[in-house]
Length: 249
Image 1 (cartoon, one colour):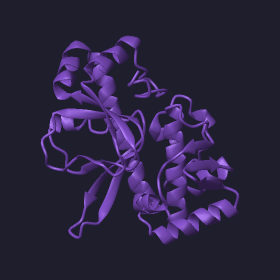
Image 2 (tube, rainbow, N blue to C red):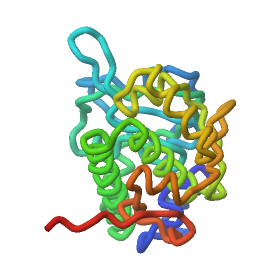
Image 3 (cartoon, rainbow, N blue to C red):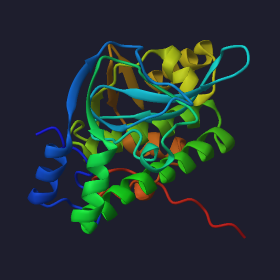
Image 4 (spheres, rainbow, N blue to C red):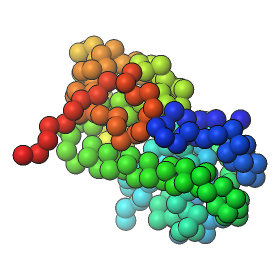
């Protein structure tokens, strides 16, 4: 089933078997993509939305010098561009970071779902709101955390998202990204990322080697990244370490 990871283990939005079956029927095509493949370009008309089945993908913007700023990372189970359904175009590019498998859902099928299944429509809306919550956490990470905090927060978030998709045991997960990718995600240089990862390893907090992340001390990693998974609305998040941010005075 291509949709088995979509909104898996999220609070209050579990899909019924009938709803998953309807989404399966809505898929018009499944594609396998090579790493670093452009899937959608900013400003181009879109008639489909994309569900990521396997791999890691990104949304990004280019500056006038052609340098890329990542604005989102997508993992298996994510609908990358449901917001393209009402907008019809995106204001950013979408591309793979690793090899990926995607399912394409025509917008005409989403229109039919809106008419036929209002509860499923609400759950699709929930997915776009979840994207917005992750964007806010992204802004917090880049705006308020130092280099180590940014990387720690990103690794905690990725662990939590993969945990909800059944792709992490809460401490170990595969992540086919390079240190250069982490640098773009966290707004750092590759040299700085290398230094931070070495320090996390030496402090016995986290090891990232050969595309495998192993969190040795989840509490210290969450504390260093000021990570609280509440914004991800994961049903079973008590197994995930978190910290409470102090309230503003």
